[in-house]
Image 1: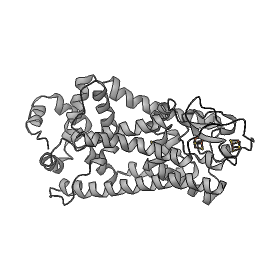
Image 2: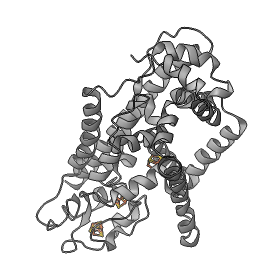
Image 3: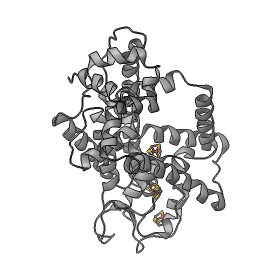
Length: 361
Ligand code: SF4
Ligand code: SF4
Ligand code: SF4
């Protein structure tokens, strides 16, 4: 009985993770087939997949700011905003669930950590005196991101960034960053990948500003892992398997910013219904969300938000194929560096010519 429940929740989460990983791989290949020929001045055979905008968090954060200010969805990279809102919403309903159910980086990081566990017997957990200051790094990076997107620029500045030449081709810039990596990029990615074999969730636990934001939002989530002290036997199995190194057996409700609602603890608990995802103020013995349903709830919230954006016409970018075909062959020019892009926007003439060529699909 316990074995069936355990394999069920783990399988449901793995299915979600693998499905999103495959989707991201397909999007990545299709985007490369669309963008790379154009950087060489050739016409692509593939169409541009809007989902690639999920990898433009700064642009999406700026779009979110305009959207929340009542200015509607900005036409450049609207899918990025849709994905960001979906990610925030699912993490605000089932605490930080994007990290354990959808994020491809989280999936890769988890796989590397498991590999380390198999190869080495166990991964290294830095002692508390080192772990706590290292964990603060992601909040410093998050503060920097939020300062750039929400404080340093006023609303006209945000609009200017979103309209800038740099932002309009930011997806291709990002592709080239990985497709033609510098030595520094290769070294940093290599250190993170190898390091994740030795230290579980090296990037996610210590450095990812996105995860820091989702953890803070997850604190507000109504659905969290909850322990029933009345039936708990204090066996400690939940704490032993927790990848976030939380003392689950000593908590009634897991409200930590590090909890990703992965439910590994739920799967490990030998007492049926003792540990489960529950809404607040529900007597533990009375109601629980079945583990696989908690996975489904998180994914459905995300899909629902993205579908709402798509159905309301906010998915395909307002930058036309003709504009991309004109810009991408010259993407290495200073106009498309971050500073250059912003300077061109502020200079006036460039912005005017941009507006003239801004033929929306
Ligand atoms: S911490 Fe960042 S990289 Fe890791 S799973 Fe969460 S969002 Fe993805
Ligand atoms: S407390 Fe449970 S759900 Fe949260 S990270 Fe740990 S094992 Fe996963
Ligand atoms: S695994 Fe279940 S029974 Fe054991 S300590 Fe954790 S909550 Fe209690």
